[in-house]
Structure formats: C-alpha cells, structure tokens
Amino acid sequence: MADVAPGRQRDTTLMGMYLFLASEIMLFGGLFAVALALRLLHPQEVVAASRRLHYGIGAANTVVLLTSSLAVALAVAAAEMGKVKGTAAGLLAAAGLGLGFLALKAVEYGMEIREQLLPAFTPAEAFESPSAHLFMDLYLVATTLHVVHVTVGVGLLAGLAWRVHRRSLTLPRSAMGVEVVGLYWHLVDVIWVFLYPVLYLVR
Amino acid sequence: MAYPRLWPLLAVWAALLALLGLTVGASLVLTGTPSLVASLGIATAKAALIAWVYMRLRREGGLLRIMALGAAFWLLILLGYLALDYLTR
Image 1 (cartoon, rainbow over the protein chains, first blue to last red):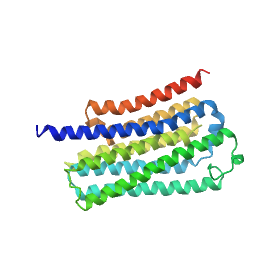
Image 2 (cartoon, rainbow over the protein chains, first blue to last red):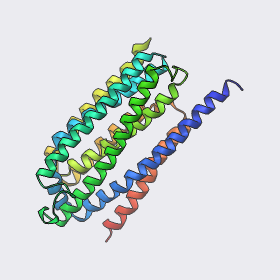
Image 3 (cartoon, rainbow over the protein chains, first blue to last red):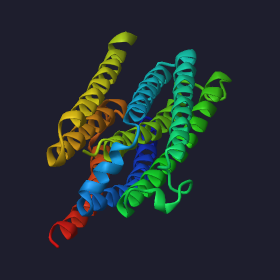
Image 4 (cartoon, one colour):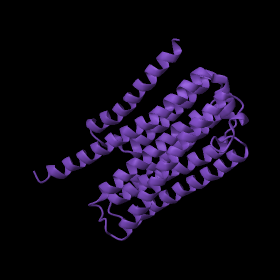
C-alpha cells in the first residue's frame, strides 16, 4: 500500500494538470476557430495581411521557445536524477529565453505600431481592408494572450529555479513540481508552434 | 548513465528546428490549400514531438495519453463543426 500511494498521487497530479492544459487548449481553440473562419471567408485579404507580418522575427521567437522547451526538458531530467545545479540552471535558462521571447515580441509590436499594423494603436482607416483589420485584431488578441502565458511561465520557472537553488524544494523527492511547471511551459510552446504558421505564414 | 537519457531530448530539439526551417521554406513556395496543409501538418508533427518526448507521453500510461488526445479531439470537434458551417453555405 505504501508503494502504491505515491504512484497514485503522481497519476492524480498529472491528470489534474492535463485537465488544466485541456482547458487552455480550448481557450486558445476559440481563437484558432476565429482564424479558420476568417481564412474561409476572406482568403485573399487574410493572405495579404499575413504577408505584412515579420515572419523572420516570428521564426526567431519560435527558435527561442523551442530551445527553452529543451532547457525545461533537461531540467526535469536533472531533477529526477537529484541534480540540484543542473535543474536550477535548466529552469533559469528557460526563464531567460522566455524573457528573450518577450523582448523580441516587444520590438516586433513596436515595428508594427510604426507601420500602422497594430489595432488599438492604428486608426481603422489605415488598414488595407476591413478583413485585414479583423485579422490584425485576431493577431493582437492571440499574441497578447500568449504573451500573458509566457509571462506567467517565466515567473513560475524563475520561482522554481530559486526554490531548487535554496533547497526549499528537495530533489528528487519534489521533482514532480518541476515536471508540472514543465508541462505548462511545453504547452505554451505548442500553442506558439500553431500560432506561428496560422498568423505569419498564410500564403 | 545520465547521457543516454539526454540525447533524445537534443535530437528532438534538432528535429524541431529542422521542421521550423521546413515550414518557413514551404511558405515561400506553396500557396493556397497546399500551403495550409503543409503548415498545419508540420505544426502537428512538432506538437507531437513535444508531447511525446518533452511532455513525456511516451513514458506515461494510457490514461494520460487518452487525456492528451481528448483535448485535441475536443478542439477538432469545435473546428470541424465550424468548418462544416462555413464550407456548406
């Protein structure tokens, strides 16, 4: 019985986390549904609007997030082996890369504001078409919602790195905590993996 | 002992970057439906790699795998019925 309980606790924790991640997928799913409807209704205008986005910056940010996922995966592996330094370093690297993503995103928003592409900073008449305006509304809402998730993730990763470093989270006993935050971070990465082609690469 | 467990993580990272290059390359040559299919197909492949290796579904039991697939399935129901509406007008 004593052997069964920790395994069961682990299953329950992961199950709860996956349920939360499923709700996140549905939250972003609504935005992907909007993207699909826009593309079906206004294919040409959506292509024209997507071509004006900086796909190179988007690709660079994809590299940043994919690399941060690698750092988290390495941190989880280190946590299970009880390696404190490796775990803290992996988590800190991932948090740093998350900050890099946010910085690049800020630069990109700045460029889009100057190019009169970003709704809320651009008068409605400046858009090529009402459909282009709608597409950019979607771009703004989807990317800012993702930015909120990255910001939360950076806080979680940095906090976790600190706790591991201070030994207030003992490894490998508490490796589960690292794993759960890692799952969240990977999902934020997966969402970006879909947002990138859906927003930047419509041709 | 430690290193054999880490190299799949690095291999997946390399594969993810290669797929990113592929999707950017495809966007330069393909248009319309082939472009959509290529970009979503590649994104799905990347998501599957992340879920299978980084989120470690390959090591988990059936319950969690069903849970993860369930989330994708609910999303497909949402998008499927929406597409059905717009495509049959």
